Image (cartoon, rainbow, N blue to C red):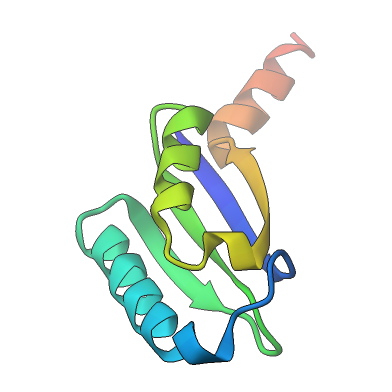
Length: 97
């Protein structure tokens, strides 16, 4: 399954004394997820936050990966399961037959 993961600024404030290391670790973790295929892509939003398209067998798996993200408590998260475009349309079209 694919999931849209959206991170919005919020959650716990990031402590200035740990910000540099948390940003470095978060960048490395996000890059690892894209490189190993766990995520198809990851993008930052202008103004803060970002999104990724995740590949996972379940929402629980997505959650486990999110909790490993070094700054996961510094964001508000939205996770939405994604459906295949053509499969969805084919399913709807079949109801008209």
